[in-house]
Length: 161
Image 1 (cartoon, rainbow, N blue to C red):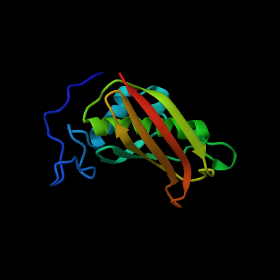
Image 2: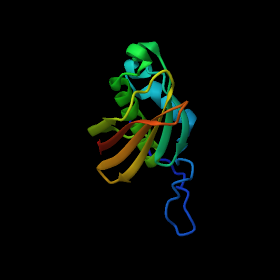
Image 3: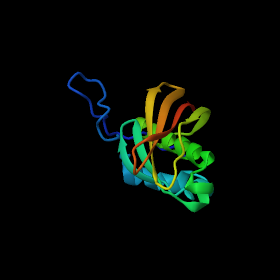
Image 4: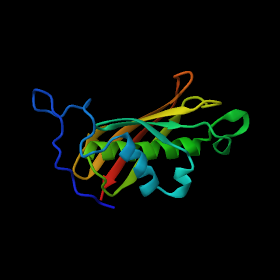
């Protein structure tokens, strides 16, 4: 599902360097990233109910809705669901960085669970740290939507195919 890069130039600062706060280039916005969730990801990932709430160049935030099907005793979201949400958010952050879809694969995903995410939605924020020609490095933070506390941190490496 490779799509050609957009002819839309990347917004830059006065210095000529890319402006990371600018909206994603190539027509990549929250609506197109939400559509990408349905087009590009497996049905079980779609069942997480992820919602794209914010997208800037190289950074995407998703809402992971509280869901009894993803929870264990006490309403705690299982780690597998958080890791899948983190991985998915990072793919979308990479798309927002590149400005278009490009085949990629997860090479490494290192996750630390800091505390339970229980009885509340989660905010999943993924940031591209460095994008090279063949590898992309990123970090993800999952926080509670109600209390704002960090519950999970992850670092990732992706190979661009």
